[in-house]
Structures are given as C-alpha cells and as structure tokens.
Length: 288
View 1 (cartoon, rainbow, N blue to C red):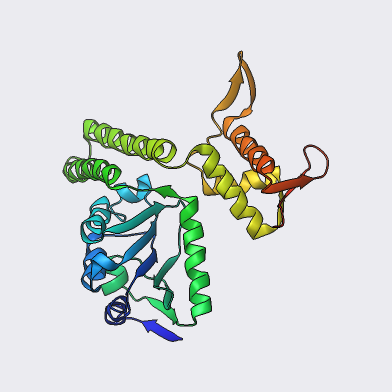
View 2 (view 1 turned 120 degrees about the vertical axis):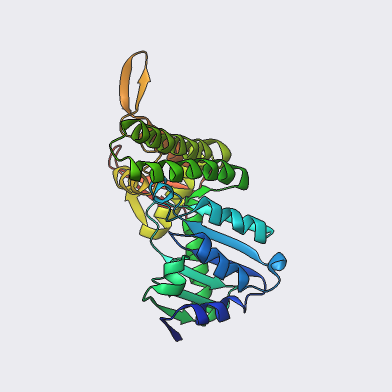
C-alpha cells in the first residue's frame, strides 16, 4: 500500500504509465485538463481498453464540471472504450489492469490532478484490486451508456449554453437569455432521457439488472424496499408524476409497474424468487 498525497500529478502519471491492457476509472467530474494529463501519461493507447464511469447529468454539464468535449477526447485517443453515466456517483477510483487501484478524493480534472489538496491510497494487493474493479464495473452496468454520436449532440448544446451564460452575465436582467438557457437545459435533459431508453438497455433490462444488483448486495428485499432503492439509483426514469392509465383509470406509478414486470420476468427465468404473502413478499436470488 502507498499513500497518494498532494501534489498529486507526479505519482498519478507514474501510475498511469504502468498500464498495459486496461484502465477502469470512476470520476464524477471530468474536464479537458484532466483528460490531457490522463491521456499523455499512457503509453500505446491503441492497446489499452478503457472503462469510464462518470456523472453525465444535466446539472454537471450546465455547470461545466463534466465536459462533453473531454469525453470526446477519450474517443479520439483510445480505440476500445466504454463510457457510462450513473446519477449520484461520488467514487473517485482509478484501476490499472488488475494490478493497482487508487481510491482517492481526486476527480479527473485540473483541480483534482494539479491544484487541489487531494489524498488517496494506492492498493497493490491483486485480490483487492480485482474486487475494486468489479465493484466499479457493477456500478457502470447500472448506468447510462454514452456513445460518441450522442456526445457530439450534447457537446454542441453545451457550447450554446456556455455562450448564453457569458452573455447572461453581462446582461443579467435579460429574460430572453434566461429563457434560451432554460430551453437548452431542457433539450439536454430530453437527449439524455432519449439516449437512456432508446440507445442503451430497455427499461426492463435496466430494472432487471438493478434488481439483481440489489438482491446480491442486500440478500433479500420487499418490493417496496426494491422500489426505494431503484428510484434512488434511477431517478431520471422513475417519475412519480406519470401514472399507469387504462381506460381513464389510474393504476399507480408507471415506473413501479415496470419494476414489477422486471421482477416477474426474472422469476420466470428462474433468476429470482419470492416468499411470503402478496404485498409483503421478500425477493431473493435463486442459488445456483
């Protein structure tokens, strides 16, 4: 074990330079300066498989703390890439192959790598490193897959937002500018949601994977407990304002019906089971 202290950059570059096959990264905030340090530290990038988990939310994009342009640079520099976004991500983890893992306070940003007072721990126990990597990949599996074409759309919109915000700072009473800014934010939100439900997994797949993850973590949960966890993880697609409506009658929240369908689908496949009375069932993984 080794302590990672500020100044962070030197040790971080040395660590990245040891990469031979694969890098797995979790960083809620990612900007171009962070990617420049990251990319320039890795030898033979064409041979490195890259897994990136971040928080590509509307707020982070609007606040310019997670930059679409930075993620596009990753696509320019590497060939085999998987980028995912998970709401409420806070973990900052960097895993080199299955050899080293750094768990730290540092985001992949200029501040995180160069200027902030950060701290971290480097782990070289291969069993622990493998476990850390698997945990991050489990998180990523719950998230929203972010492809290049989608990133280019969001990057174009984020450029508009930056221009609007610059003008707005100099004309802060201009309601038209505020309206334009709001429209751009809504457009990004719509693009994120569309990508979530049409370009990646189906809603059933999202909820099914999440149910498996939660039951493997907690052992057993009631439907109500599952719903609480699922809404916390997937707040973007668990909208309490949308009911399931049949012939004008309301039958509860639509997303909860989708969770129920995922439960029944998994039970039919033999992956999960339940016990107890209707409405108070406990759900659990089937032993293999």
